[in-house]
Amino acid sequence: MELFRAIPSSQLAAAEKGFRRRSTMRIPNNVPYVVDNLWESLRPKNMPSRRYAIYASSTPEIALQNASAPLPEDDEYVACKVVVDAQNIRIAQLQVTDARYHTDIRLISKWISRHGKELAELSLDNKQKIAPLFMPGLHRREMKELWNAH
Image 1 (cartoon, rainbow, N blue to C red):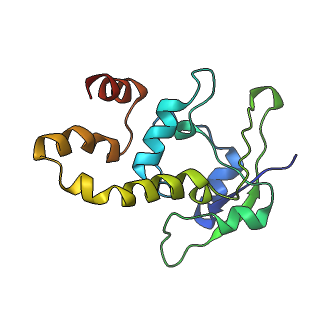
Image 2 (spheres, one colour; image 1 turned 180 degrees about the vertical axis):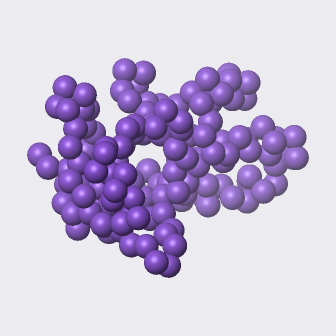
């Protein structure tokens, strides 16, 4: 299976030398933080975290369509083939072209909207207890602490 990733044209020279997986967490810009936090807390421990993953698409067109980070005016995205040593790759394929279209996002957003009045009427103390769910990058341990405490 061929994989493609859209990168800024200004990074083509660096891409020739190869990119490495980042060791730092990537906070999503296409998925609400509450959904990302729930996904991370429910992720089986033996599966890789999407927060540290390298993303690629099955076609150059999909890679370009889903490139979402803002670029300077004089730059543009270019679809490049991803070359990975076969023994170092683990692929998780979504049933949608981008995580932003995952049904969990719509379902969780609807649930929050349906319960918006209740949430708005919570005491400040209770609002502060659930606020971390909506913050970027909660770790599994932090989510577990929230579940246990509340």
